[in-house]
Length: 284
Image 1 (cartoon, rainbow, N blue to C red):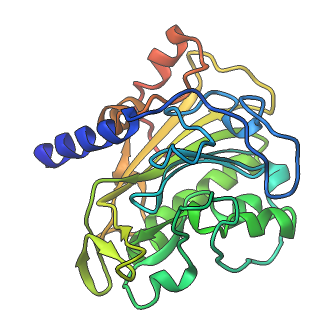
Image 2 (tube, one colour):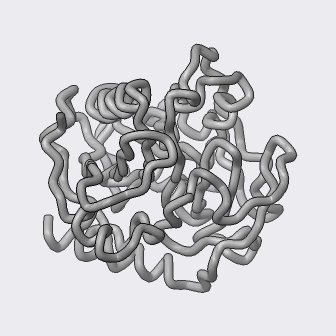
């Protein structure tokens, strides 16, 4: 396991360090003005640099009102997806349909819903549908394939989904959440066995070994992080062993930084970040 994580981390760092610069502006799907760090979904910083430059194929920045993505055209998956969650984001809009992302530049091979047909892995949302169910337009945006990774059905439908639901419970209680998640490693086990890649030869999607999520929980909208701020880290194997109880997969945000090479919540003052990212949550 240690050698897997070391090799995974090294591979990710090589990808992320290749040609990355600070975030540039991009236009949202819905015609909103371009945004940078003013986007509420990255209020506390991005885990790693990305830019809206077609040459940045391993970390292409996609900013939407609903979430922010660093997309990797080589793995055909997001490197990470970041969003803010409050009670106002949760409604009863119906689920949309999976689509290729129209914001990807020319030369990027677009993943379609059919790429996943018969592969034994779910089309696993990173920013999930219910977290943007306040309007149909916002919900539809979560179904772009740049927000999707191959997830083992038990992972996606049990532990991962239960943790998503728990986060919405916190939001409904009036808390403000800052969430980042993504894939890690290569090779997972779905309902048809182990695979490292899925899809036709011209659009191969990397199957991750793990999926992870970090959450910073503020007591109310507009609150400022302090040394008592709650953070939750989840590191979950992408296989059929996952069950509905997500608590065994809890770890610290710092541990996930060590495993991925990312830096979370970089805009939180360093003395506060040091404390809150080292905590291991109880899951309650």
